[in-house]
Length: 494
Image (cartoon, rainbow, N blue to C red; front, side, top):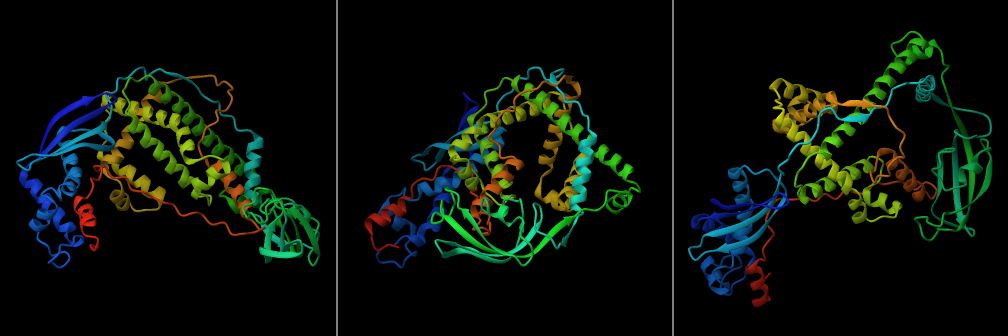
């Protein structure tokens, strides 16, 4: 193969031709024949047994050219990228396919490449940095959460109240007729959790074990089961048992039970230290992000659209994975937001553009600062990832190459240069910017909403299957002339 006519174009794109000699092309053509011959019927031959020259005689000598070019395109592209040391992004396009009289194949490609970056200011930048001050109220709230985690559920002989668990049987009906999914026995219902349709849990409050009552509710207008939406229903409910969470006493014994400390005071001091470290890490992260964003804004580069599109795709996958951890998927989440995928994806563009600029500035800083990564640092990173994901270092090495690990370490070192040289300023109060990001808190709210919508009042919540589509950097697929000709000329061909 020979690479020729390499030309840099606007928006960080490069065009080039790859010439495949007659022998390479002939091998590909014969491979296309072997791959397709079983699909072609030729009268006088058993299916799949017709010689190549017979098929070419019927349909033309170029009958297998498109398939051959399609097979050679990714190989030719990879060869050119390696020879020209191109740092490509996105997927390439094949702009032209030409076969000469000498049966040499020329493939013409256009691809986006990593842009040339000119750094602006990246040291001595200023950004607001939050002051860390963990209050006693925050410590007490954390300790109280630990109490709740260590509570025990016990049966009580009294009427149910909010935050109790009522064990109930129920059967629902509309106009006196029971409906599918409206009956259950031994259902554990945490009162105040809002897991059943609105108004249901409030009427269970006050019931005692053995008590029965009719509960009147109205299904929401947007209820997922259209036959019940907006209709009044009656649930006959029997309370079998009332349970409550009993919290442990807040004393030294509690501290000993849940920690390595002997006294409650020591435990609280450790909580404050932990919360302070976490708050400081969060403040540092926000401060560093603000500095890096400034440095990214200061670069000069022709950013190819492919880089932004790739980041938008990455963001969509991240949101979908995050939502799936809460029993949803992106499609269902957007349904409750009243948005379509195309609109939501476009809302991701500003964030995607910032991410691209961040990648570019950190990569360039690593270059100009001559940042190096030692084998010891790479091994340490493998060990850290192995511990983080509960894998062996060898498993992580098989999943992630040294180049990927080294790139991540370089990026962190470049970010640290910006951070260390930054100048913190007093934080200012600003209105929170509304972003289209499906953060975990937002995802949980959407999950709760979806869960409520699926209750009848307790239908199972099932996460939707994730559809994954692999994206390959291959040429656009040419039409298969052999199959087209076969279908046109011989309707009996399978």
